[in-house]
Length: 111
Length: 113
Image (tube, rainbow over all chains, first blue to last red; front, top):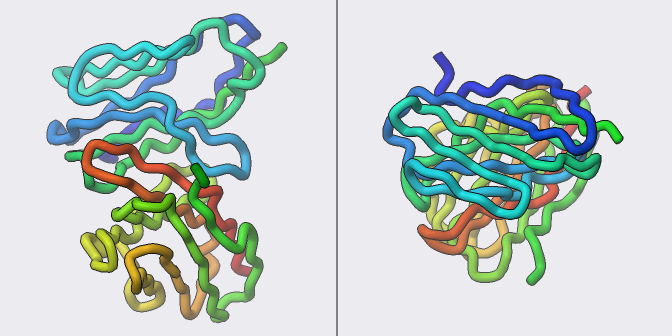
């Protein structure tokens, strides 16, 4: 069993749709959870950063962490063609430790 | 604020050749990571530095990979000799403190023929 599981997609949605992206993990010691967006031929860019369980909202993006189920989600409301990218979930044990990534989900938002 | 700089952006070499990548993190970022991202996969840690010291190199293939951060600022990652399976994007990330997040550079895309 991999430490972090993420469906690679691809996922294709029409403009304006709500997008749900998910990851599961096996190590209950993870405390910090992140979502990164990666455009083609670019480095990962941080979207959301959450400590422990709970929800966090930033504009059109909402991140949820359920540590009891070892499950994290990212919701994108009113999706735009500019949201087309690969979304990587990542997690780590403490503030200064390496990130463990999922495979990434490739998202296409069609105008 | 300038971002994380990496060079070269692209490199094509033949197997058994050597190659070096350079990274300059954001000023003041004491922690530096090198990750390897194979096509279709998430990044995987190769090595972590804190200032000029190695914190974690457990996943670095030390028979062919080496890295240094002599003055605790910029860093170099070297592969010698390269294998076909080393074809990947090599990402550098910096982190300012324990409560900070990791900021990634654009990566170096290596193709080994």
